[in-house]
Every structure is written in structure tokens, then in C-alpha cells.
Length: 253
Image (cartoon, rainbow, N blue to C red; front, side):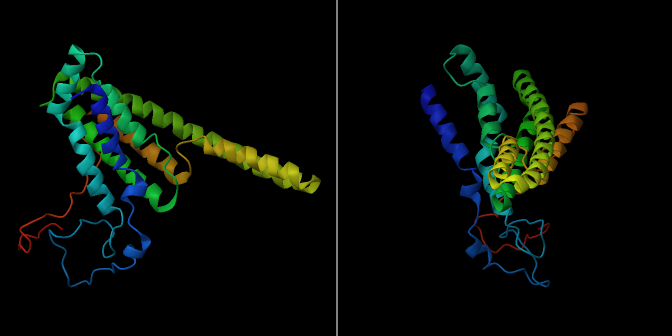
């Protein structure tokens, strides 16, 4: 396949993990009531973390894993390394990783429900990158590239979290200035508020939830670097099984 076609295919795959694509309509979510206590969950249901209520993030997590897991397949990763070595126009493995991180961790996460979906997708990407770096069946070069990508991601996360704190302080200062300036005219207050808002918008980590997400992920990577045999990020929840429908093997749901 031509390199340009491969890059178009990668972009198409990554488009499937955008929060706006994975979000379920609120009208649909309101139609799914909590499951009654005496009704057990089975293999035909999404595995949830919000029992007894339906987990609105579970379908997004399962769908993201379906898209991303194949990008981190160790055999595929080894082929990418080899093909790029033979032809520099072919996508490099680092290019693939960078594209995934740009579409997940380094993208703007928004707020509310879509922000939480973005966080779930981030964790799916992190889990797969860690798993590849720890996979003893993968080639040494693949594991080396994945390990360095993790290390660089950790550094970026820490820098972004610190930047978010600095932007928060600037925003709080701007609000204080705006309150003082309002006594001297509305235009001065608006300029101060706009300056604070612009500073806050520059941080990818965003609000407290985003900062916590980045901080925790950096800690997870740091622990992984100390012992790569321990992938501390939980594995993504699988989608409900397909046919045959109606089996009694419904344990652990």
C-alpha cells in the first residue's frame, strides 16, 4: 500500500475515537434505567463501573479499544519498523505513535461528558502503548521505541500539568484585576477577563479533572518505568459478546 494511503487510513481510524463520535445521545441514555437488583448482568451487556446505573463511558471505552488495539499489534509494529528502514517514505513507528497521542492525550478535551470520554480514550491508548513496551514477544526495537514514547509522554504530561497550574493562577489574578477594574469602567474589566481566559485556554490539561488525569497518568508511567512487568493501567473493557446469544456463561459481569 502506498505511504500516502497508509496515512489516510490511519487518519480514518483515529477519527473513530473522537469524543463527539463516541458520545451517546442524552435522549438515548435517559431511556436506559438502572438494572434491578435481582437481574444479573451477563455476557450480552457492557461491563460497567457505575452499578446499578448504566455506564455511559463503557461503550466508548470498548469502541476505542476496537480501533486502537490493532495499531499497537507487535507484529504490525515490527513490520512498520522494517518497512520504514527499507523505504524512508513509509510511515515510521514513531509517526504512528505520535499520531495516536495527538488524537488522544494531546487533543483538546472539552468539558462534561465529552471530556470524560476523551479521558477514557486516553487511557485506552496508554494501556496499549504500555502493553507493547512490556510485550516480550515484540522485537527489541519496537519495545525501545514504545518505551521512549512513553518517557516523552510522561515529560509532556508533567509539563502540561504545571502549565495548567500556572494558567489557573494567571486566570485567578485576571479575575481579581477585573473585579477591581470594573469600578473604573467595564472595558478594563473585560480586557482583564479576556487575558485570563486566553491564558487558561492555552493549557491542554484544562480544569482540575484534566490536571488530575495528567498527573495520575504521569505517575502510572513512572511506576511502569521502574518495573515494566507491571502495566498499572487497567485493561479496556471489552464489548459485549456477539452470537451465540443466550448462553449461561455469564460470570464476572
